[in-house]
Length: 192
Image (cartoon, rainbow, N blue to C red; front, top):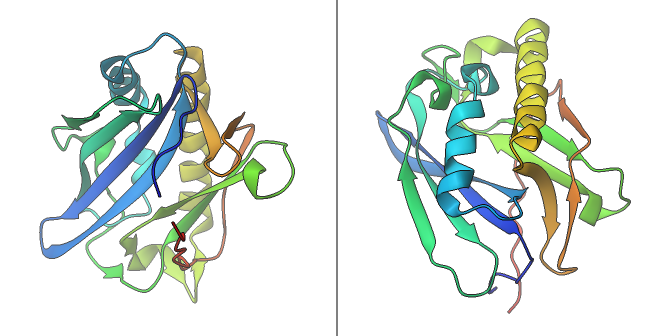
């Protein structure tokens, strides 16, 4: 499926790697940033990500690079290395569970699928869950970090949004919840 044209919206792919695992993972989020460039968006991300956002992932993983594409129908994708600093790295422990992840739910107040988004954090740290229930203290700290991140990004003029490719619309995120239970990602395939 080709990327849609949505004015002032940037598609940001967070590319995860693990030093000890050949697999990779990608989280895609969208940001509304009128008048901003790809470099401006990355600078805002780099200034506002916090290690606590990734505290539920094990400590050998990091977001090695960020790929940013302006959804203007003509822009190229720009790749920004993160430097694997603390703000871009997991810190949840040394063992992980391959079958599950932590689920961050993004709510916009709009109804239906166009008003909801999800971020699946890979490489969930095994010691931060018990029987599929995330450690309450770590979950609350991660949720607070995600909320702070979204607020700080909006203050920088780079608002976290949920983008609907089929509806060619965006809705700004108004609430963020880190689910108490572990989750699995159901793959969706689009017919072109």
